[in-house]
Length: 138
Image (spheres, rainbow, N blue to C red):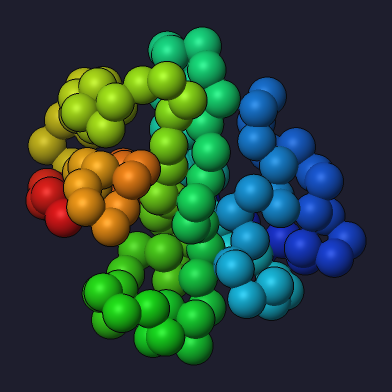
C-alpha cells in the first residue's frame, strides 16, 4: 500500500481504521512524526475483526535511536519503516493470532511468535508487511 506520515501532536486522535488511531502506533520515546504503512493498519483491522476483541499495540513505529536502545531489536527492523507492530489480542493465544495472520500473509510478511515464559508473563505477536516472507519464534 503506501507509507503515510502523521504528526502525533496534531493527529494523535485521528482514526486510521475503525479501531485504530495514530497515537497507538507512536514511538515509545514520544517523538513526532509517526510513519505508518496503510497495509499494516488494514492487516491489524482484519485481525481485530476476525477475533472481535481488542488489539493492543505494544510497539509500532520506532525511531532509529529508540530501536537501537532496545536489547534485542533488529538493526533494520520493519518498525523503523512503519511496517510493523507488536500486538496482543485480549483473551487470544499467541499461536492463535499468529496462525490467523499466516492466513492473511501467505508467502510474505513477517510473523514472530513471542510466547509467555519465565520473566515474560505475557506474550505477543510481531506482524509486518514486508514484501518477503520471514517467520520466527522468540
